[in-house]
Length: 468
Image 1 (tube, rainbow, N blue to C red):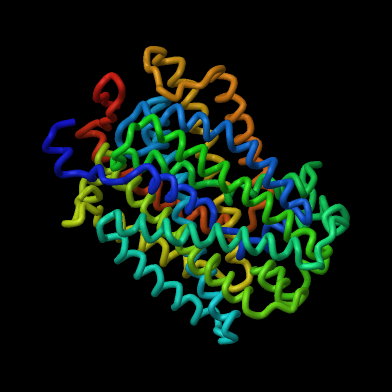
Image 2 (image 1 turned 30 degrees about the horizontal axis):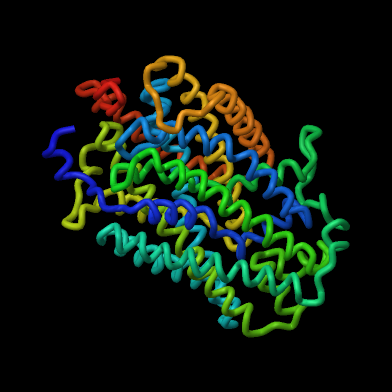
């Protein structure tokens, strides 16, 4: 890469701790709002499902940790699948992972607006909640155009407060005097999901829990801006998964013992904020549920939207820099932040909000994120195996012992999860996915019919720049 390109592109200014907090903050956000979805899918055994999903995700995280140090520019799935297979797979793999990332901002801002409405008894209609969501999106858009360290430090603060408040809440529930282990055993495998093709609903529900884990793959989007040894990306990737997995298991073990599955999910609790609702009606608490809601919903979900917004912008920037998107997508402002990717993300987030409806948007977007994420992971595992076979001389500082075993294991796990996720998709999820995929197909056709006829895709590899 020329010195001119380095000076004009993204700047190396991110410390490892902030790359870790971006990944962890992106993952750890769903505990206090989507808890109703989690319990609906996996009942009082939600904590067990999270434990199993942590183990299922780790092989994929380890493969990402091996791949990340090989390539020194942002792009992740874009790079791995182009080098491992071809540029067409690279394009759609990155588009699939962004389906998960792009689904986050509209879902998150609606969750925050809904929490404000319920907490303060505003009885806001869906249109009013949608308007609040639009305002939050615009604020995040403006923040994303500032220096990147402003964004990551704000996110790190939100993450720390969210983690501490979640651990405190779990401990308070555990020692509330209402907690009973029998509540866990009685509803251990209950679920609201119907069996499909002979597969138990609980298993399908567990597969959908991949959503509260995606976010570790944001780390490769930030290697270009990292000012630390690139091999340390493994600490951020695996550390974020393990941190969140341990807290998920502990917290939902505490919540599951508070009351029976039927009582926990009855009434308004099934529509979101299950933990907060039950702290109020079962324990009679008034002050802490509000404080916890602010710490975990407002600040926690704020950490998520900032992390995924930043990652999506960088993926779009990388796609342009490597000739997967028009050159306009890589133009930077005075703070070295991509301009058009921010505008594009704001626009598509607003479209997603307009496609929502008041009764099913939470589940629609949750399922959409699960499916897009699992598909992208599965494709990347196939590409990782091919890279290891095609380029045996490429030695990663994080090379896995028995690398082929872990790669194929991760690939099988992700294919199974992707399949199970299709069984849990609703009409709203497929509609949102169809609109998003349609935009991607149009951009891909433009590249195939126009740009790629004139110029090739360029990827920086351990052997230097390669054209595809």
